[in-house]
Image 1: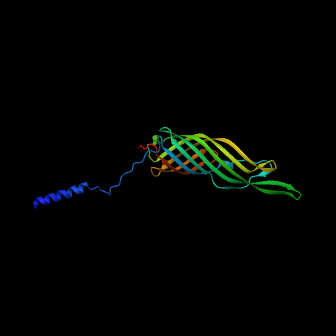
Image 2: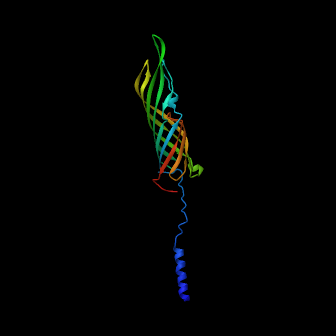
Image 3: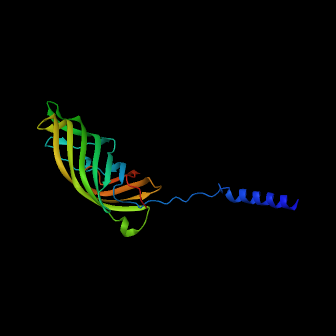
Length: 216
């Protein structure tokens, strides 16, 4: 009887030892904020639009209010080295210049309202330098960027002389910005930057990171 009791106790002890503890949670280690071969997609909105604020009108026209949506930005970045990434940037901006045109008729001066629907498509290439290795923080990724952007601008009623016309303009503008990402999870981060690219001085949004070379 004593032998049977000893064998039963040994079997129970073995079963309890082999059973895994399902209550213990695995600790997830975050990747570094930036590393080589990583891909990040960003969507953001722009604020303080230079296209809307700084423009000129010919004689006979005066500025009215501006209506429309704020610029939308999208960006794809690829990590070339442990500190440098290359990004393809895109922007769509659509708004209305509500101009005033002054006339002088038989009964004296009068004003006619002109609406100039404007659409801007922007695309460019930018190189970024990341300072995350200096901070040794796996949640904050500060960076600076420089590049060039090509703008395609279409005006539906561009003031010219004493009338308006459809006008399409192409120009190249420089891109200089500094910003940071704050990673809420290993994949998703809050994004913000500030500087000059003619589309917006400040952009705020979020990023999603995809790993093509997973390493801690």
